[in-house]
Image: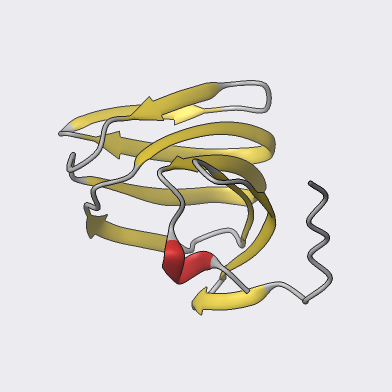
Length: 106
């Protein structure tokens, strides 16, 4: 099955955009574009979240553990774990959510 998403990046919060790249029955892949200084407030959701930093620098706080991430770094966030992010310089991240985040479908 090929699913082509052609909608533009949607602004979620100031300086934080997301675009659903593809999804299947069990997972969804999203691109996030983050501007320097943008903050993703602490939150949680039932979805497992696996990410890869393509460019830029961010600080992730996953369950109270902070780590600066650079291009090429990756992470995994279990479902229901509180996490947040601070963007140190413009960044692009690719993340996969399992199960599919229905709220991220175009």
